[in-house]
Length: 316
Image (cartoon, rainbow, N blue to C red; front, side, top):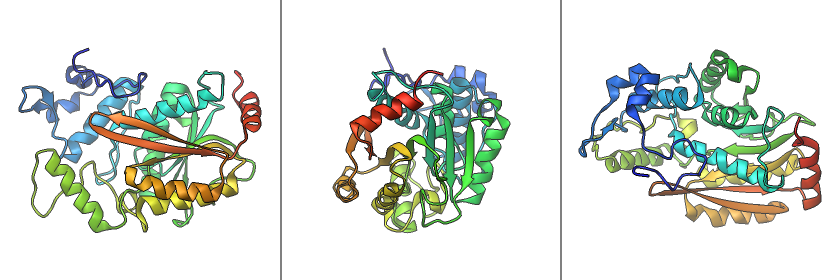
């Protein structure tokens, strides 16, 4: 099909080019941001956070039935197609332990580490598969915004919950309660190790979009400091996640995290080797020319995996 993004997951609703007339019909305010690009096609200025935010609002309304969605200025506004890919590949991962059938319904629970102000992963996971979610978040402003999105959409209000992580040095601690079970966790960790590195990455993005800016470069897609960088960067964050996951190894089937750079994988696999999970998987994803991936690990033996699936994933 002309214009099809064949690299995306087969179930991804965003495999075709954005249909701006349809999106504008769903969200009329998008019209103010749509313009012709140098190739004569309708598009938006992807270096403009307000335009990206409105595009996301239209996509979530058109494809997922989310009628009320917005985030405060300067919070991370993620590209929807890539987020959808992570959800669909996680669904495939669960299916591998369920006779090839994707477990669906509210009794399937996901933990979103760093739900952000946008709540995009729980939105897609719930609207596609009926899953329920707990989202953790260190930023109080993001917690408030995510809760507002959930409260404003009846489809989400009984299935998505947001919890403030009061201790920024912890990931699962303080969030997972004793005996609370999750079928998977997912995370889009902070990429950068410093504010300077984050700003440099943003300038590079804007240049790649053909929008050379001066010294006051806007962070493309927005982002608060805690969303964009942390001490130790991506590797440091995922190492901490792996270490803490050992403490909750019987409470979550698959732990997982996005890994932005393939050069970080050896350090992450070394940390996993030390933690001693029963199984580790690396799942490759492609969005256009960009290749991304997530790493997943479980401490459950094959027998325990079958028991988990029989107990929690049986149709209800």
